[in-house]
Image 1: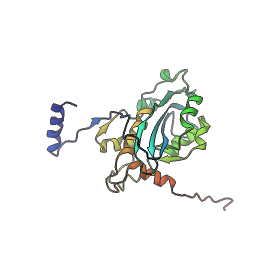
Image 2: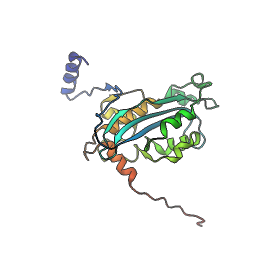
Image 3: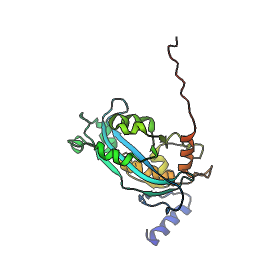
Image 4: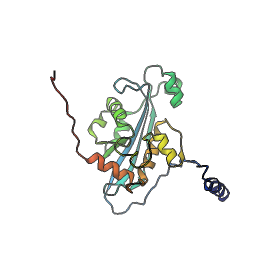
Length: 229
């Protein structure tokens, strides 16, 4: 960005009346790799024909791998991603097209490649989604490898509200960091999640990815009543 634009932004923000959003520039490197133990993670996102994870059709899938330090949560590099449109075999509801921009013509005859998905996911130590309760069952229906992986949810397993953000919604979290991007397309959403995970949380002073990893490693239990009256 030119010095003139930087000065204009500084002038606007110094008044206290303006906050300037910057385009998210999708960095490929966050930290240089060192001798730290490194793992592979993937961030995933799907766009679908509806909100019922058990029955909705897949429209788009994105998988963005990255390397990170398991001890500190530092993110090193973003690796080549996989992204594909997918024909759901049904008409796309108008509301979904308005939200995502994906049309019937765009997905006609398109299909995600199970072998490509397998290749990019097989070595991942963790799969991260910003709403894993939805993305996980959808992906497990289409690509069984996801059922064999450890998962984490960047929406619910980071306490964004306790950190002062007041929201867990991805687009609003971007605005809180003074970023704007093309929301509701799978690849862009994945890249924004990685960006947020690279940031330091304002109140706990932890890297967001470290906070997520710690929450994901914490044992949890599900209690189900069977044959209860």
